[in-house]
Image (cartoon, rainbow, N blue to C red):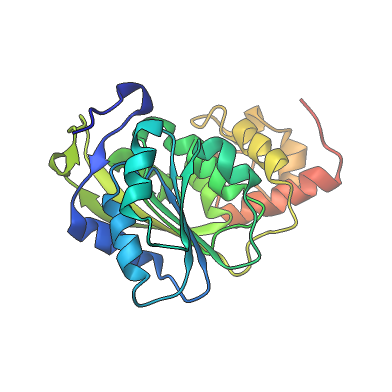
Length: 259
């Protein structure tokens, strides 16, 4: 048995019922591309391979720990459309492109959940859906809305509808982490703002939420906020996503690089 690498935040989800649930939530269709983040010991990959018995799609299973690659390759050697990738997800995702509908799933290492979410949002080809297992508190944070919005929930929900599905007991992971997990589903919004610069928007929201408990006129000029349709006395957590997108467009078009 392989010993978990603590430096990689490895907590393997071995429950096959949950693995099947994740795949069902992904809503894969024929002809699509699926990316699995963190194949590990192959529990989720195995269920994905079984799905191929009834549906024709292509899958890439990413794993950063090279110890597992030979095992995974031998497990799925007969699956011509299932590719095992010895890769760091944070390097692989930004480079990946496809002209087919894309879906992503995985039980994410808790310590790099936020970077993976950012990489997912900023992909050249945004996924139609993503199903992730994350730390429970992070799942609650990503799915939060006004008046309890956060930087992360606002950034992700600008592009995706986020649903907190269910809690997963820490006892279902091996080794057992110190916190419970949760399943979240991201579905690409039909009218997501494809025109905005995600890198600049990310920095803009960081500025907006730099002091989340203070009024927004501490981060932006009150005049700009009013002209952009936002009450300067509000806190960042109380502003809906659509208002942020509108204000970002105004702020960018006005050339407002004010400090």
